[in-house]
Length: 83
Image (cartoon, rainbow, N blue to C red; front, side, top):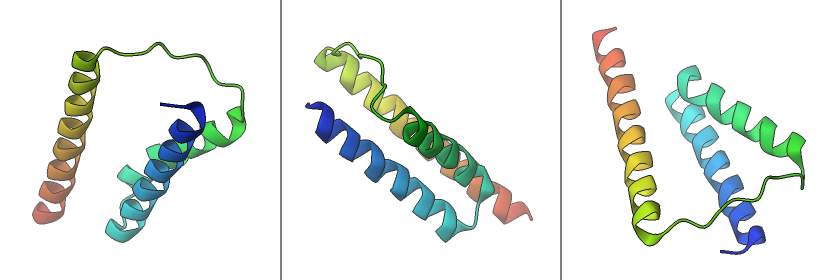
């Protein structure tokens, strides 16, 4: 993946996360995405070089990210149901 496509995907993910936070009216989701966006904006082109992951490492990282998101949504919805 090229650096430019990685930056585009990062900004799309940030905007999608902020959009979900606004849609769900959730500060718990919005605050981390605002901090990530601020960090991306302030760092500009000064980013660290990342090492390539193996295919297995990439799959494990993607699954862990998806599981974390699903758990996060589950907790948020469970809190809304109790309130």
